[in-house]
Image 1 (cartoon, helix red, strand yellow):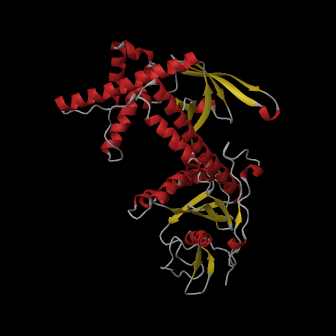
Image 2 (cartoon, helix red, strand yellow):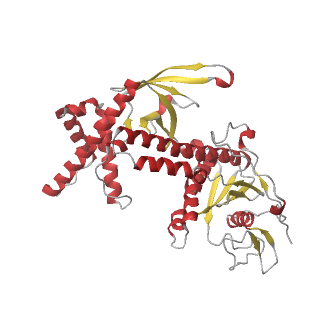
Image 3 (tube, rainbow, N blue to C red):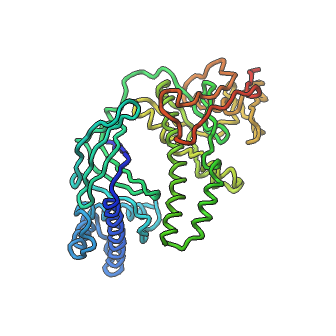
Length: 422
């Protein structure tokens, strides 16, 4: 079984939003109380409570403390389960030791199969402004209006998570368990594409197309600096501090939404044209943590979000029952796809690959994408594309507006980007 998340924007009244904030504060306090109780139990009896004991302790605390009674009983148990999972990840060496959570950083509540109800699903508006709405009731919180931008199996929902983002926006996430066997395709793959990820060009395809890196964070750096400077001048946890923090969070969420929108549209484009996706198995954290990595290049690596891009591309292919083949990334830019020779003198500043063994010359990113295909067992074309061409603006593919307000334009073709095989 695999879990798929369906996230929808939610709207509520000021009263309901206030109740949600109150419950988040109570859940945060319950989490910290469980943390201290666990520490005391271990110090006194050298005993570590299991999941069942933690859930029962959460219910007992809810009965004894009136402040915790605002929470639904199963939501309180989910708080205990969240602490249990955090502790287990620490014991397995996957995360830091659990510590006290701050109220303004505890942002979500989880309802299992009860405590919520979805009703009044309807279509509103006409034409392009037509939307599908629904009404969601969460026990002890109130009603929310959801914008359903896609269908989802309501009868298979295992959990409902309501999240209050730092910007003040509310999202509701439905977790649905699906069988992996439904995703498998019996068709024989016919074509494959190699994708080389980079900083200057976000993605270079083995068919000669490329997508320039929009660098949204770098383009918005001046505004982010102003917002951060404004936040630093406010009194910590004051009303003005929260207002400044909300404005900064909105800017970061805008950049995050822009990236995800771009990545999903690129993934839909490739998954609609190819049956196999070949990606290099990049160690992004290793690239970032290299001592010789310059500060600006490190910032651009963060801005490119290679890990998220790879996850989205893999998801777009696998949900259609198509193959994803990760291959080792070692020397993909220095290896000649034609003869396999290694150009050890190639540096990051060199944008053209030249093989000293066979005389082959090609754009370095295009050569790397062809090497990926070759390593995955697919035979690259004998005469590869010799002219790099940009991917058309993604809105023209019928996928809607790209990146919200930060519209991504396709770069104009430059004569100098045409490279020929010798």
